[in-house]
Length: 339
Ligand code: EPU
Image (cartoon, rainbow, N blue to C red):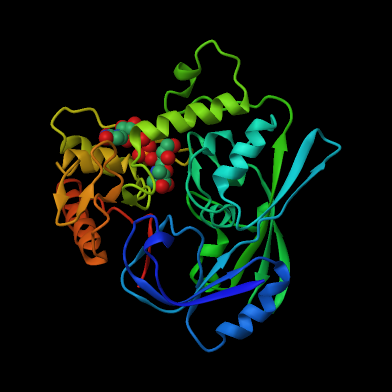
């Protein structure tokens, strides 16, 4: 079923809470709706969006926003001890995390409380607490709007990297609409505890998917702005991956303060953007109606849900300028601008 609304505010369709409008908002519930949808949007600007939890609308959207409400779910057991869960793209990732954790399936528990739909999570390769959704993706079914047909891509065809997939490549923008995501989950224990103090929090308890998911959720609630109360798009910037020589430069600029970093297999290093931003004094600062979250400076917030897109963008630029001038690192946005 296809439902269309004209000229609506997107305030409740983007977690930043920006009060921009769209000319059309179109929801669909079935795979079979896709060809008709394409006929409806022919000749106009369109884009598929989930919960708008990683987007920043720079202005009103002069076109049609397509929003999946495909909420199907099915499971199959495999010979190798794994189960396969196929989720409609409109399901919330956190609902799928909760369902699988409650049923004792391993794989999604570290991704608890990440906002957004599972279809969007497969596009963005969301990650947290040492896990990325690509680790459990088996295949993704899409509607190819250019060929006008459904296609299924195996995980190896999806070009996954840090917050990256082939869906995000410039040549594929707007080509594929994710309709179903199939995950491969384990029935035997497979806890990942190495990141962000998880092991200490779990202590001597026997880890279960549900215990891990609730522990991750607790840690996230301590640091991240509450979705729905304080507007944000999660991490606004990516953690920069730089050459060793850049790390030496950052160390030289830090007058003896130890610079946190993670060595990557190819010899480069990842420096937490949160740390760089904190060093430049931006943590907790406010500029107009936009602010830097006081507990995690990687997150730009709309504290009273009154910010204009231009205020968030001005804050972004001011932070990028400070970090670049001090450390010579150009922070890249993680959140996507819709201009
Ligand atoms: N840090 C500071 N000051 C702070 C907070 C953090 O200096 O106030 C430094 C610390 O050195 C800390 C490091 O930043 O060890 C990393 O912080 P944290 O573990 O909180 O994670 P992050 O790198 O800031 C990433 C993801 C988050 C994900 C967390 C947890 C990105 C861009 N962000 O953040 O993802 O939840 O790890 O795994 O990779 C998102 O993508 O929207 C998101 C929230």
